[in-house]
Amino acid sequence: MGVGVSLSGLAVAVANEGGVGVISCAGLGLLYRNLSKDYLKANILGLTEEITRARKQTKGIIGVNIMVAMSNFADMVKTSIKEKADIIFAGAGLPLDLPSYRTEGSQTKLVPIVSSGRAVRIICEKWEKNYHCLPDAVVVEGPKAGGHLGFKPEQIFDENYTLNKLVEAVINEIRIFEKKYNKEIPVIAAGGIYTGGDIYSIMESGADGVQMGTRFVTTDECDASKEFKQTYLDAGEKDIGIIKSPVGMPGRAIVNPFIEKVREGKKHPLNCPFKCIRTCDISSSPYCIISALFNAFRGNLEGGFAFAGSNAFRATKIQSVKDLFEELQEEYSHTLNEIREV
Image (cartoon, rainbow, N blue to C red; front, side, top):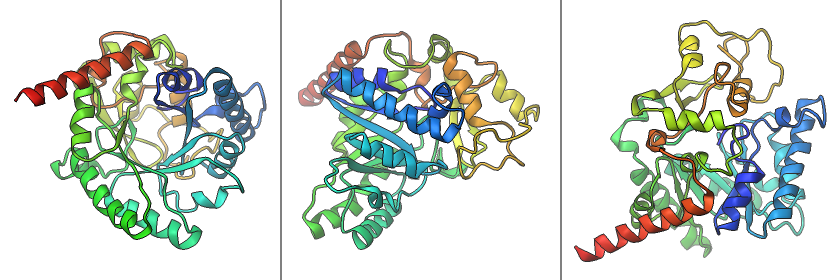
């Protein structure tokens, strides 16, 4: 969900409706600069604050999303476990050592985010061999997702990499480990899921649940600025494109003048102020991505841009999370009834 888009505000609203509310770790050091001038320390303090706020407002399930590529990945994981987050979602790299941070008595569930059957097989083999455990669930994120994508540019629009096919491939690998170790590992689908009908369709393909981001940006409780949300409402299908991120991965965003300037070679940072992502090389980076996403979160779209899923252009209104849940449930039921009538 990018920098500041999904904090305790959105997470609480989702959790209160029976979903899993997720707090994003990305860029918390910028949001909580008042707590420490040290960016990495401010990340820790900010995450502690966000989890604490969420706990005060809901008895529902609160998760934390942590990118493996973050330079302080270990600190974020340790903080999440210390603050008793219900779930850690770890993607943007293979979280091969994630179980090593578990403490005695910890109830925090560990859920890797993958983009292939091969990735989940590697994770399961490493976790079982080194830590005698397996993932509590797995998120399969397809190429229609917003933000950074775990695919090569040529794979993003390749029919061999559709979410349905990826889910099938991951399920096939998961079943082997489930049978061998007598453990159920739910498979959660993500990327391009926008309606209740989409939820029904992907669950019919074998997924046990879904993860949604884009649809929840245009909610009252989303923590981003009204200007950020408005970019979704104003976007047309042609405005959503693939960008080359400084962190070395393709990403999907709403193309705006900032991105156009980058493509024309008009943006370049003088230094790296945060060292937030291990794979970001300041010598070749056209801009500081954490600053660009933070600017957009605050409403400064001249100095940044909004990540968005492939269906972001379908947004037409701002609504409450409660209303959105009801809408998704109605869409799901409508699709189910149509199938039954055929």
